[in-house]
Length: 282
Figure 1: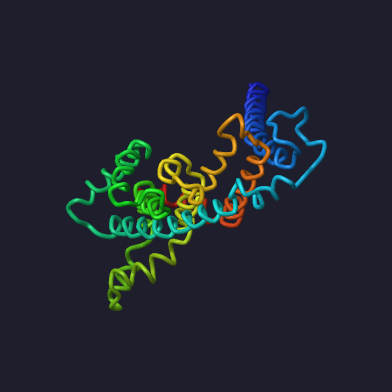
Figure 2: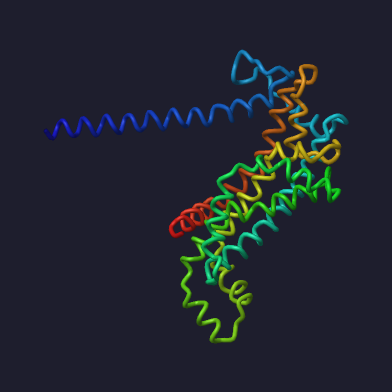
């Protein structure tokens, strides 16, 4: 009986390791292929070997020197859009979640239900309506349009998670601050924000990554090449059979991933703390 249990435990553990190894290979291999392809001479997607026979940095140089591919401009455009969307979106999400966490009003539960329901629908369902609105306000082909839409959509995805985190902060701190004469805004700035660094980190990273990698909405709104983001610009690299520079695309993909990898690497602990704490209470 004991031997059978040990054998069953060994089999389960072995299967778990096999599944984890398979998942790791499936996740790492595409990233490794893109990284090595960025150093491969030529433009072809196909290669006989995973590791290039000759390494070159020509593709990285071409990204910033080519008059056709305005990668530096696209990179700066994307960085501007992502940073401003992140800052505005985080502020809106924090204010909304603070109101739902600390105040009691008649439409509170209704508001949370609406946020939950709206968050279930994919964003591209509203793109035509948003496109018409932006056209009426003469905001098409502008970065301001993207920043407004990205920032305004942030509370839909992050309010309930942030509220769950704020619910874990004791209300006794608020009451003590009120006794000392602090206003609601003062409590929010001096008490809630310093204690919410893990949640702010989580929201900032997610709100930064979304605009950084978005393609569909940016392609719909941005028309001129000078205003493109990196996602739209890199799509243009492999858009047609006459212009299929896959190795250059791989080099651009590597450069795009660098800021995200750096941010996640340095802020990983705060990110995990913010996500788990925000999911602990509703």
